[in-house]
Length: 309
Ligand code: KMH
Ligand code: ZN
Image (cartoon, rainbow, N blue to C red; front, side):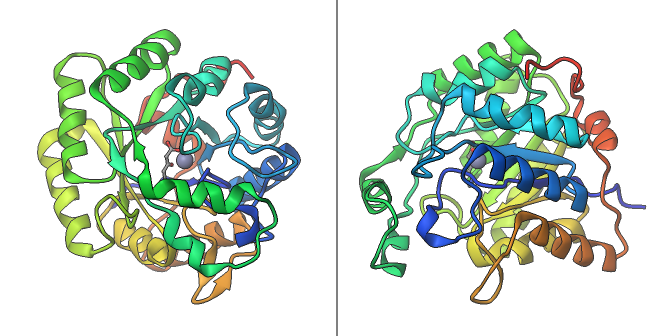
């Protein structure tokens, strides 16, 4: 019998911009409401970023996280996972501020540097709601998402050792799995490891199923029983890759952070709509969704009573 599928939902992220979808949550109220709905639809983990409430620009201020995290925690039992990827172009300290302030059960950790090109989305729009949007997208033509060994060490010591926070290890390419193996070899992180395999980001592994199978196989070889694995894919690849992960006995992530769509050319009206869609697909395959309590047990989390929000 396959294990229940841990569904993560990432409601807003730091990649898409307000012009691209009117459904992208921006304000703390919108992020809280969208996250709660997604949890009610079946997401056990919510992966969080914040945005400037006026402009929608990715924003690292802890007070913004503190404006939505307690609301979400009051309304549901989902595991709250704070991004340390932040918004492209933030410093390492900015990227960590919210997680250090909120001491969450889980935080993302991007396990290697890569080009991270979101400039192709410039072609899809000619008028923008805010001047920062095209500048931000264009800047990624010459941008390296920096996650050096020094950064990885700093983050696991600061958050892992300092706060007992466990990580969503985001692996965008094969080498990132070996970077995680290196972190483990140093004795700096303890199992279980939650490995998020990422596909379809320009600069990382492309959204070809052979890449998923190969990275899953290598993760299994390197981490064996010490890991839980999950899959996210960007844009139109989101649902097919999430479904494939469930078929193979893995876990999955959806949410407007990774795709604004729910069908071909059709914007997703909400995060909950994406969760509901994947839930239907997963259940029709004969699998169940994991509850937050099951996710906490399998991911070895410290519990919602040991956070600061
Ligand atoms: N949107 C994902 C591909 C993070 O927040 O640390 C990247 C991400 C990074 O989730
Ligand atoms: Zn993220």
